[in-house]
Amino acid sequence: MHLTHQRGPLHDLPDTPEAYDAVLADVVEQALVRLTPEGNLEHPDCVDDIGDTSLGITSLLALAWQRTKDPRLPEAVHRSLAFHLSERVYVEDNPGYPNLKLRNSRFPYARYVLEAGAHPIGDWPSTAWALLQAVNLLDLTDGLVDDEQRVELLELAQGYWRWLTEATFFNPQEAGNQAIGCVVGGLMLARHLPDAEGGLMRARALELYSDEIRAHRVGDRGALLPPEHGGAYDNNYGPISLSFLAQAHRISGEPVFAEDGDALARYIDARLTNGGFDNGGPRYSEQHSAFESVLGLRYFGARIGSDLGRYRADSRWARHACKPDGGVDGHFAWMLVWQIQDTTRWHREPSTVPARHQLRAGTVSVAFDDRMTPSLVEAGGTYYLPAAVNRQHGFGPALDGFVFCRPMGEVRVRDVRADGLTAKLVTKPVVGRDHVLRHVRSLYVTDGATLWTTVAVERLDGAPYLLAGMPYAEDDGDRVRRIAAGPVSSAGALRLTHPQGTGAEHFDARSELAQEQAAFALAADPRGYGNPDEGWKHLVSSTALEADPIPDSPDDLHVFAVRYGSQQPITVSAEWTEDGLAIRTDAFTAVIGPEDKQGEPTLTLSAVSR
Image (cartoon, rainbow, N blue to C red; front, side, top):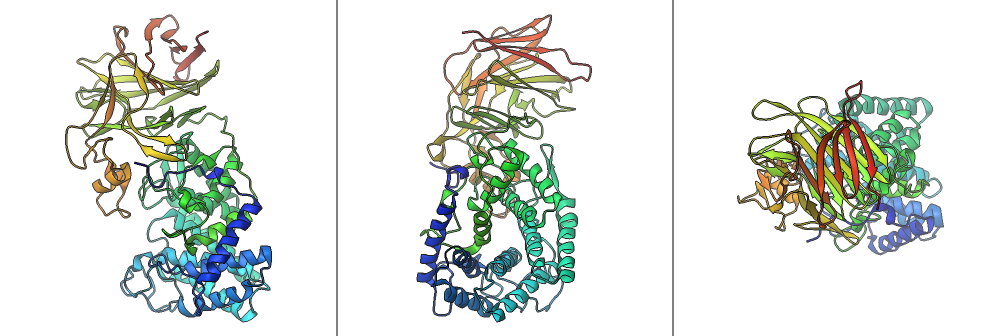
């Protein structure tokens, strides 16, 4: 089974001017066929996310006219703009809309669903999107439509802004991408107003960003991030927020947008595997955006010097939003307009700067969570998620249903590169059920093709094992597909176990259920509204790799060793030496030495001569 939305890396899409002209040409031909006598450009199957869609197609036609001067387009733009102005502008309060601060304001807004009261909760983002479509048209229609239409459009855009910022609570869905998008709309609209009025609107937009978005950022993995549906990051909407930050910086030049975009970009870079796979979020765990992310990933990838374009997206939305039949949908047209207008090129090389929450070399990568426990391991084209046992999730030593991976104190990290090897040593104090403080030393070493994980912990009574993850997916050409096993070997006995329990709380990787589906089933609210990250925390058990200690661990330690990316047998030894704990494999020798004067761990690494 393939994961529906995990497809090809975004930087694999051609982004030359010629490629974008071809995209616009296709949109033009579809639109001219679709255009109704009334001027409607909505897709015939469009029901929700509809209030801004015709206007979005109109903006793409205006951009195409700017680039080609196609004589068929002025009339189409005029008619379709007239349709939106007369048929898709609402000033009567939508029955049941819960987020109004000012009733009967008569400010215009766009509806998520056209029928009054049918689904009013989506009116805020629909209006923000309509504002963005409108300001793009203001940018693109000088000389294309008559002054009367432009004046009416400008007044409409101002009304949208007032509805979003005065008539309703700001950002009622706690969705960072929507909120930053609204700010972008205000910044773009301000440029079309007289200096004094435009200055006030620009100041208000910046104030909203500072007080309503930036002040509420959420911390994760050392970064402060715009909150998304109540969480720190969502792998569908987070990159869309990055695109909004890119556009905000492009049009305003304000350093704060560059600063926050850089921080979000580095965060995405750290959590993203080499192969572009990622999962997790408070709205969607595995449902990836596509063209909506290109602008941000490309713009900030160039700024931070990393290949953010490796992000795997939904290639069915590779250029624009579309319906199941492939027909263009104008809902996100503003992003395609900006993507075409921006001339930044993809940065295709990985960053060479070590990142605390990432280990990456060649085709191997490890993303670490806030506790410096792997959240995602990639080796041999296979992706491993943290396994679950007795409601505890992670990678680490386990004994009697307790996983030693949650730190009780400061986590120390040391990055080393030597002899073509890349390594990260993570040391963390951990308290077990017996209240004894133990130090878990986890060493990750890669040659760019396979990943060695060696974990040492003070000796435990009983039969401990290393919880070594859950094989979940693998690259299959341009797609990611589900799996239930992977190429792994261990210096101790290795087992692949599956949960004995039944029901949503027990995730068996052999089933066809995706992680996102299982997480939503465990969430408190329905799919799309529940928090899959919170739901997944309710998981009791899962498919898991379990590795026994190596046979010749030192008397005072349990040492575990696993290699991902190969099933060839491995030999690992560990012993105390004058320099520290020496770990020897057939590929490298590593010595975890005494702490330095600052209490930081020391590590020396050398490759074994062949």
